[in-house]
Structures are given as C-alpha cells and as structure tokens.
Length: 249
Ligand code: PTJ
Figure 1 (cartoon, protein in one colour):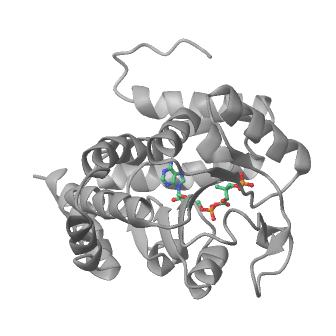
Figure 2: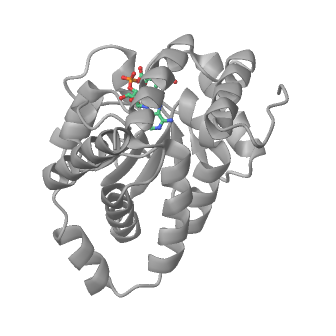
C-alpha cells in the first residue's frame, strides 16, 4: 500500500481506493467494482461522509432483524471483501451468521480467492456452493447456496444489484442492503436500506449488535415494527439536501 499521510483531509477515502486497487491485484475485486465504488464515493460526498441519523436507525433495525432471524446469511462480493472483510467476519462471529460468497461478475477463481481471504481473516464458515437458483433470475447471478441465501429468512447484502434484490424480496426474504445511493433500485426495493458507507455501517452495526444481542425479543420486535423503509429513505434524501445547503451558508 502506498503511503498516504494520516492527516490528509481525504485519508479514509484514499485508503478505501488503495484497498480496492490491492483487491484487484489479489484477484478479489472485479474491474467493475472500481466503477461501482466511484458511484458510491460521489453519494458519500453529498451525504457529507458521515453516518446520518436515518442510517443509524436503519443499522439498529437491521441488527434487530439479524438477531431475530431463524436463518440469517451475510452475502459477500468482491468490493465488500476488499473494503470490509474483517468487519464482515467480526459481525458473522458476533451473531453466529455464516458468510456466503455471491458475485455479480462470477468466476470460480475469484469466488475461491474471496473465500480464502475471509478464512484468513478468521471466518469459520464461508459458503461457496451454487447448487440452488433464485427463481426468475437469469444468468450466473441467480446461483446461490441451498444452505445459505436460498434458505435464508434474512439476508444482509452490501452493494447489491437491484434486480437480484427484487427477486430475493419476492422470495419472501427480509433483505438488508447497504447502499450509499438512496435512489438506486436496490435501495427502493430492499426491506431495509442502510444509506451509509459500507465500512462505517458495519462498524456501527458491530457496536449496535453487541448492545442488542441480549435485548428482550419485545424490544427487537418493536424496533422492527416501528421501521418504514420509504420514510427512512426520504430522511436520507433530506439529510443530503441539508448537507448541500450548509456548504453555501
Ligand atoms: O464482486 P461482484 O462481481 O459481485 O461485483 C460487485 C459490484 C459492486 C461491482 C456489483 O455488485 C455492482 O455492479 O454493483 P452496482 O449495481 O454498481 O451497485 C453498487 C451500489 O453500491 C451503488 O449504488 C453504489 O452507490 C453503492 N456503493 C458503492 N460503494 C459503496 C456503496 N455503498 C456503500 N458503501 C460503499 N463503499
């Protein structure tokens, strides 16, 4: 990794870029991942590179869902593995949720490299089998593990494709997406959309999950029932508007 001074005003953003470039070199990230990241960065700029109140609320409710789930799963793609592999493994350990490698631009070699990367970071279980098919989703994107995403009642999918998100929701699953773009199809289709940067979101979720893991089920259910995704997305959009307006005061 090249040396980026710690006091650089864009330190976090530059480190994220370094991680993705390194991920490309290690065969973990797809070239398309760089483009997707650029789009995410643009939205993060508009949000003010901070966790908004709305995002924190969505992160709390997402944790409640993961704790209450019978069969939760964390889906991992190339960008997520490179940017936040360690955080994903820690969340998986904390809540005893298996990880599944699930790629948009699938190659067996990249899936295996991501699985080894997660195992090196301490993951106990990483599913890579693709023995089940998400109904009505053409091509490789629909292939998932019968023990993981296919059987899951709650799926955490950082940086998901809108089409697949929609199909997972129509299978009756609770889909928790992390996506900086509040207007993306994924954001509008997911059950819970966390409009926050992946690493910030997962860092917060680790803290929130530690707080909530022993909470009474009534409290978790109240959090889940009190949440409305469209209202939360509107709040994220308002937060962007406020942030932009503040720049011209
Ligand atoms: O590794 P693969 O083959 O599974 O491919 C992964 C990518 C991300 C390339 C693939 O899923 C893809 O093409 O994603 P999209 O459809 O471009 O969607 C990515 C979404 O994630 C966009 O809406 C971005 O705004 C958002 N995003 C990008 N980086 C981040 C992010 N959201 C949160 N945190 C980020 N760091």
